[in-house]
Length: 358
Ligand code: TXA
Ligand code: MG
Image (cartoon, rainbow, N blue to C red; front, top):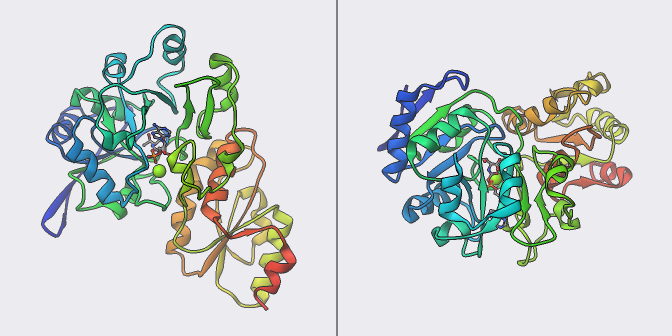
C-alpha cells in the first residue's frame, strides 16, 4: 500500500514478526542506505530510523520529530561488530552486555566515531540491540547501525502500533513497516555503564533488578521520576515534557480519589474520560472509560498505556483522569510515564482539585 501525502510518498509495508518478509526488508534497507527515514517496529515501541553514520539523514529525524537538538538518539545494532564500530567496550563489561542482549536495555557507552548529531555532542553514545526480528533484520540488511528515537512527534506518546506512526509521519518518511502491536509498549531501560557506579537514566521495559543480577548494583537517581527543567541532567531526554496526550491528563494518587473526583465531575456534567485498568472499571461504570489491561498482568498495562493516551485525544472529551497503580513488574517505568504524561496536572490534594471546578 502506498499513501500519497503532498509531493512525497510513504510506503507502508505490512509483515508478521514471525515470518519476516526479507524482500520487503531489503527494499526498506535500501532506503536507509540511501539516507532516507524508515519507521520500524521493536519489542518496546516503534522507532524512526536512519543510517547512524549519515549526518544529514539523522538531522532529518530531528526535523520531522520536532526534537530538540540536545537530545541524543539511541543507535540500534544487530551484532557486536557494529558495536565496535561506534564504542569502546571490552573485558568483563562486554561479556555482561553480551549476556543481556538482545533485550529492551540501552547502554550508554564511550563513543567512537559517530556523528555529533546522534550523540548531541556528548562523549558517550546510547546503544541497543532490539529483541524483534523485523528490527534486527532491517539493521542487518542495512549493513549499518540505525539511529532511532521513538516514532512520535516530540512530547507526544510513543507509537506502539503502525497506525500511530502513520498518524505522525505519513508523507514524512520513506517507509513505515507495520509489524503489529509492540510487545511491551514502553521504551527500553537506559543504563549508563560508561563510568562507575552504573546508573539508571530511564526506567523501562527491562526490570532493573534483572539487570542488576548481571551488572551488579545500579544507582537509581531520584531525578529519574522528575520532570527536570534544569539544563544539567544526566540524560537530556529527562528534562522534556514527554509521552503526553494533547488533552490534559490528571494523575491521582489512588483509585479512591479518582472515583471521588469522577463522581463530582459527572455531577457537573463535564466531558471527560477515565483511563483505568479493568480491575477498577466497575468504579467508573457511569463514565466514559478507556481500559488498560489488568493490574494482575503488568505487561497488559504497559502494552496499552500509550495507546490509551492516544485514544483520549480522539474521544469526544475535554480531559482525562488516571491513577497511580502498583504493579508487580514495570512499576517504576509505568509510574515514570504517568508522572511525565501528567506534567503539572498531578492531583495531590483532592479537595483543591474539586474546588477548581466550582
Ligand atoms: O525502546 C526504546 O529505547 C525506543 C526504541 C525505538 O528503541 N527508543 C527510544 O528512543 O525510546 P528515544 O530517543 O525516545 O529515547 C532515548 C533516550 C532519551 O531520553 C535520550 O536523552 C537518552 O536516551 N540518551 C540517548 N543518548 C544518550 C547519552 N549519550 N547519554 C545519556 N542519555 C542518552
Ligand atoms: Mg521518545
